[in-house]
Length: 421
Length: 117
Image 1 (spheres, each protein chain N blue to C red):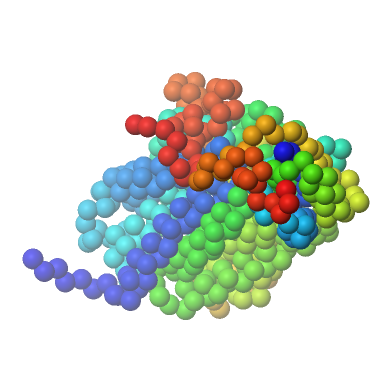
Image 2 (image 1 turned 180 degrees about the vertical axis):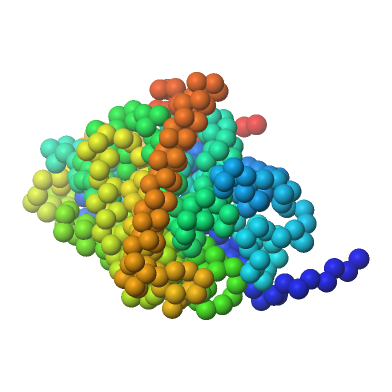
């Protein structure tokens, strides 16, 4: 049977390619996180990232996509099951009548966002989570935290979207959400044994650089793909992503050089990520020069924010809050300042574009609501999992490391045969 | 026969190797090791936090030579490995009962690749 559709082939192709780019970010994150942990935990955190791909994708297809993008129930709190299990390419997505692409292409693109957001929060609990506990946490978290927030902001019927909140590619849904979820996880888990007195330093900065490179590459799909079409907005988003990443590098290195007298490799890649985090909500709404500014400010602020944990004593091990939470807040607020209809006619004008304070006020609301909900709900889920199947590793297993204690594997061996079957 | 073991700064390995070759040493074994002495640790900076890393990277050199040449080997290492700063490392000498070349079963001084060793 031949099905004739009226989708734009160019737009659909771009969004499908973008979906693959966004998927690639999660293995990239595995390398980034893997390089930043100690060598006994590298496979453990990579497994957490890989497992997120597997389980979140399936949840998303079976009912997650519909709960996030289906017709709103209860005043925009959650979608219903009207979109089914991503089985039909003819089911219109509520509020997306302007889409020129296949609804399933949109759905699979959004699937990859849920995947990487889940994987990001693993960084808040690095080095000390049981694999089974983390697996259960992610299943519950995807349904209870990610899906509702995605509905509030990304679905035009969501209660925040209806108030005029603009989030181009996930400054709230992905970045603030992952940052504050990671904080909730870190607080419930408690500190790693020996932290902060004992130095827990990256075991392979080159691995982290490769991972950051993949994240950077994938982020073009993340942001430019969020235009939903291969159009002028996508091009703006693409360019803005590059400029914010570059400005983020410079901002972070300035803080490092001034405060520690060294500009570091880990600082450069962290700055790039901070810049891209901050441009995420803005990418298709603001113009070129403000994009450089938002990247720079995110680089400066995030470089300072990652030090707060030592003062306050929470072990957000891989700085998900400091980079994604703070960068997401910067970007979400920047939309309220610099958004302009000149870049995107379906956006709005922010404060500095003559649009008044309305947009800024709803952006602040969305940022606060996302932060509070993500932190509170994730902390509760983590507590629940810890009380049932267990989330925190035993002291011995933590000392042995995730690779050996959770997966019976070793990341680095001599490569020679040293035993027998 | 003697086993001369030296722990040196990694960046001095080239000059030590060249100096030993100049006096006729034709074999050595090296390894990357970590440790601390009076120098204690060193500082590394990650995301703005300065960490003191207790173990410092060093290179260990091992050379088996004849009794007569061990003094010259030690002197050469002392001269070529020195930066006159703390952390330059140590050299020590131990007696060796027997040395055998696996390929030929040559024993003793025949198994050592040293001119006049």
